[in-house]
Length: 194
Image 1 (cartoon, rainbow, N blue to C red):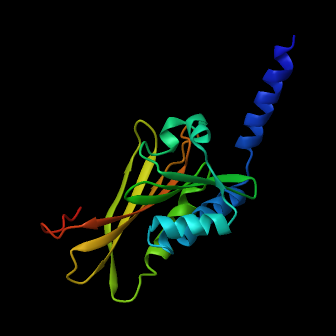
Image 2 (cartoon, rainbow, N blue to C red):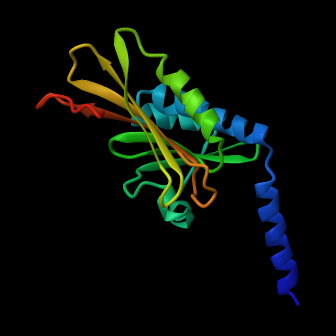
Image 3 (cartoon, rainbow, N blue to C red):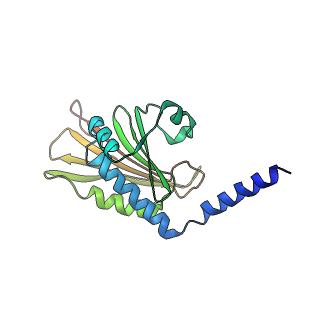
């Protein structure tokens, strides 16, 4: 008999999660991109600067134990630092690896993320070009879309790669993953993705 109240609470929580209004999901998508702009992009992926930003923003730094409790597919296997940001009852994660910075949103409207991300990547630094590298989608094993741009100065062998991976699937631990990384092609010509 004690199992029944627990089961009811679980079902109510699941229904409440499913009942999030579209406007709320859209706001969450826009906030994920704004958080990406404030953290990863504004600091060009620099770990020390992002750490200082996270501390000043009062983001909660995750401990090793916190990270172990998260779904495996939510966090990169080589994560070096992770912060949790809660905004309007939504959870976001800012993570750093040795060569990238990313923001993940557990729940976010896919179209809102893609629109805000595209607007962000078009705000290129002076002397830099925005080059689309990929806009692809798949439906198996779950709906997934990827949008990739590179910021590169004319003739440079270095670029900043910005990507938005999104899904409408509620079975994934994050519906939006925004990443920034740096690539260098000094030893060989850049590879362009058609």
